[in-house]
Image 1 (cartoon, helix red, strand yellow):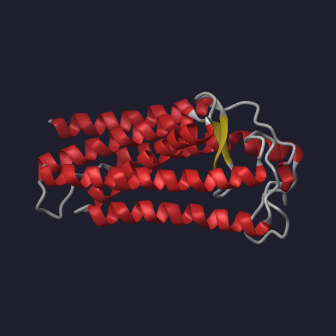
Image 2: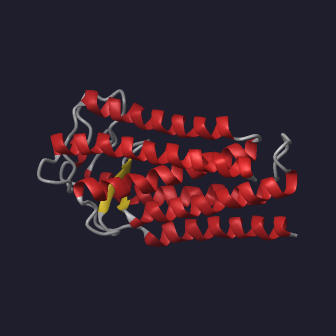
Length: 241
């Protein structure tokens, strides 16, 4: 357990540092595009910057995944470490934004969360809830992985097919909830070529330069969270036996 504790400490430090790196990039972008403070509607972003941001987000995920893969001893432990790194990174991204820019103003302040495959938007509290759920899930895996199979084996704990299905459907529901308001806006006011892609010649957010989020699909988000928490509880009770 001493080794696993040391690993978690270093992954925490790494993830917090990644969170600050993410924050610093956003601070620079907001200084350029939102000198009076970030707010909707979104300011169109030049194609070069948009493409860079797209791949930067992909690179961030790869680095967090790489940390989990390198630190874990088996597939489930690697997966758990990745979830943990992602969650800590996301939470401290907002912590550092609050420290540096005094933003968000509250946990219900709207933010643009992700760009792949389309912009995700939602109140800050929603991704924080997801991150806390990921931390709980990660610790369940880490704890039982150490207790059941030990530190010196390549075998990991087992998650059943049905439990994986719950995680997949719950995650899809949460993801769609973040894209819901944007997709509704595009379907009502855009056209079939409205969504920006890497092959686009126009600026990103040009199609939604008048878009202001109106409502977050809490019902869909809550359903997804409930499904995921149910799966975590099922795993915990099964492994506890």
